Length: 122
View 1: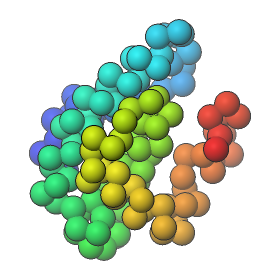
View 2: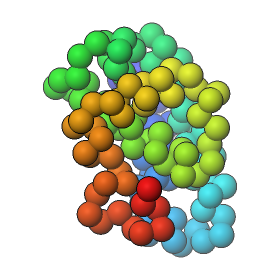
View 3: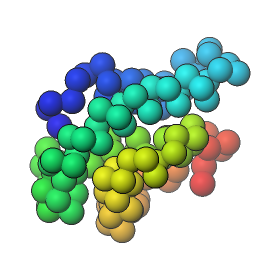
View 4: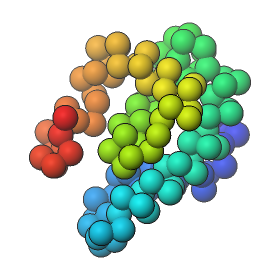
C-alpha cells in the first residue's frame, strides 16, 4: 500500500469525505467525486492484486492492515454512492465483499455512523 502515489489515494479520500467541499461543488459533485475515485481505484487495483490475500494485505486483519482495509471499505461505499462501476476493479470488489462479512467492518461501515447524513444512509 505504501507504493500507491499519495495524490491518487488522496483523491479518493478527498472526494468521499469532505462534505463541505462536495456542497461547494454543487451540481458537479457526482462527476467530480467519480473522477477522483475512478483515478484512485485505477492506481490501487494493480497494487492490491499483488498484496491481497483474503484481505487487502495478506490473510489476517490486524495492526496496520486493519487501517488499509477500513480505507478500502469506505472507498467502495463512496464509489457506489458516486456511480463508479466497481466491476472494473475485481480485486477491490472481492475484498469489499469479504470485509462486509466481518462484524467489526459491518459495524464500522460508513452507513452505520451516527453522523451519516440521512440522504446517504443505506
